[in-house]
Length: 386
Image 1 (cartoon, rainbow, N blue to C red):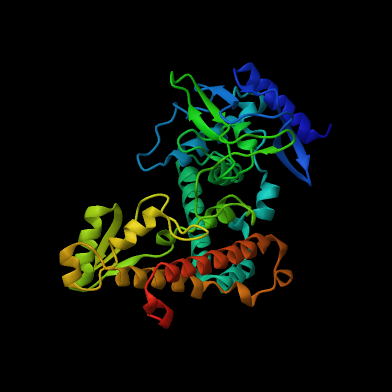
Image 2 (tube, rainbow, N blue to C red):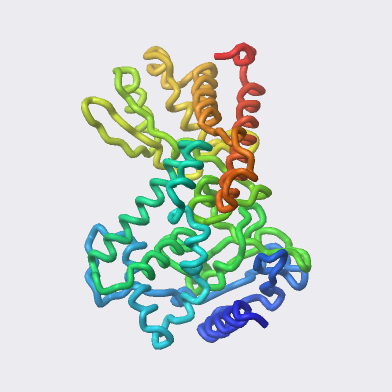
């Protein structure tokens, strides 16, 4: 048994003593060099494959008064560093034994990419590059805030914790050991639920699993960029989503555009600010996606409430089909135009960037499929160009 397996067994033993229950038909295996959770026997849909008492979680440190502007991740990062520095004397020692190491993160996280590596990604897709730069800035700002608050903590440990939280934190719960060992698949994944009597959380199978089949976990629907940037991986064979409204801002400068913004803000949640008479805004709603074969209902709804081409159309409060199709094509053509993946051969870029190349190939495939969807669902005018 290698050290990784022993570490897992020791961690599982400790959490079992705290009330965690892993179904006896589930075991951890290494297949093709990748660890995952597998069924040893058939497991029917609806089975609780993993449960844990709600109180088994790492708590925020109550000895400190954190600034009001501290996010959960900043409070959690500081609290964890304090505990980790206690070593095995910490009550919560086993919570953090399966975290990604700094050695792994330095090799895989885009936070540590060189200027040359980031330049390659910028040439492949400037919007992707902007999202990576945003991710790096968020992490840097967060770590600086934590270290300014408490200069005694180890900055490298704080950075390790903060980067781990980017890929494995459960909203306001933080790290949930054992739960985090299920690899992601949105369609086949088990889903986390709270029991009706609110005494435990459980991973519940949403499909039937056959013996020797991998049991997946669902990390919820996310923009494909999120997995490649924050989660340090991309599975070309998975089910993917593009959140176009998160990738650019919209601007309202003239009277028509400002009237469209006003109507849209009445129908949707927006983040906005105004400077020099120009309103900059962005949709602030979740799961607004381009799917692999077309837009989802939420995206269709938003576009229909934002694609007006004239005041006459706006007064009716309902856009016509031509306006909808024009707006959809503008978005799709923009995203397609900035995707330059065809100009790069995967063997010519550093191996650590391969997941981004694979992702951009998949993104282009999805964009072309969505363009086909618009053409198939519009009148003949689209075939001649807009």
